[in-house]
Image 1 (cartoon, rainbow, N blue to C red):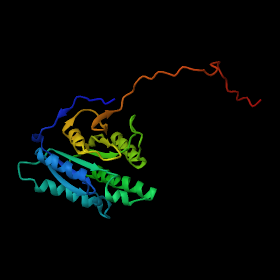
Image 2 (cartoon, one colour; image 1 turned 90 degrees about the vertical axis):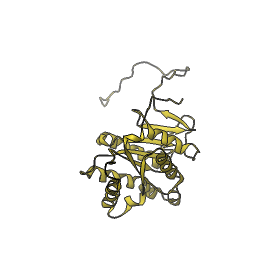
Image 3 (cartoon, rainbow, N blue to C red; image 1 turned 90 degrees about the horizontal axis):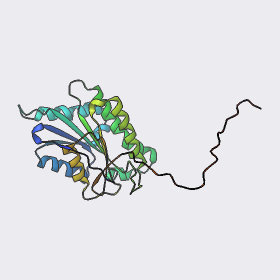
Image 4 (cartoon, rainbow, N blue to C red; image 1 turned 120 degrees about the vertical axis):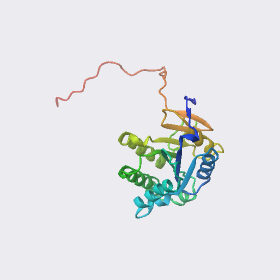
Length: 231
């Protein structure tokens, strides 16, 4: 079942600036428009920047440039990087080789965190990563193994670099009209949940639940001993 946790709304007055790293797709455009409509400033950065030979300076230039362009007295206190790994984008669909597709998903994110971890002049940003079908759901078992691997990487980053306050948001395999609105809600309303699934417009969270064992023939419960004497 969906679990709705208490979330605290973020006000535009909290001066957050969103960097949206993404391939050109409808989801990233809708998110940018929604954030702008609520008074938040955004900068769209093409994901190909992270694939450039000098990707460190390329991304750093975008981050610093946005800060310089903001009028005096309006410097934002919090930088938010929104990485949209949408497997439905045209660039993702053109990749068919499994290993190349894996690199297509993981390499840009790895480069991004390497750059952020090495940066000393800028405060650590809050990073949110959006995927599709990275996690199976009780109602939908569709799974994208490459996106699932990306979740594994981000979980490692959560442990090694808690300063980035990483959050994972997983959308259904097939795009839905409510996708952008649900991600926007996750950005605007916050709680302690950092791994969220969105299915059919509803928020799903990982929870342990009791299970009833099936009744039926049981195996011999007699104690078994492993004989390692060699006899």
